[in-house]
Image 1 (cartoon, rainbow, N blue to C red):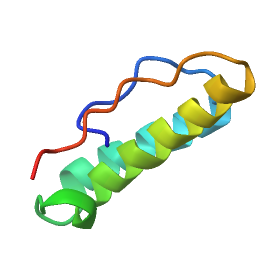
Image 2: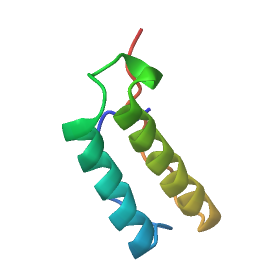
Image 3: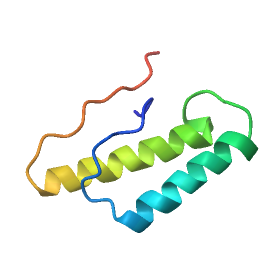
Image 4: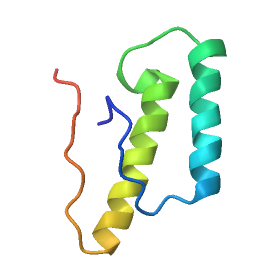
Length: 72
């Protein structure tokens, strides 16, 4: 669902974006090793952020962001 961090900030407050970035940075340096798919905490953070942005875009009547789910 989220291999990359979406550039679109629709529906995300400044506080959410700040604390999200801090979590992401801390997980990068002090978190567990990279894991596959939804077991990776950074992947889950990116997926949650993408879901929030898509929900806000849908509420505004915009198209959702393109999905970049890992292929199986």
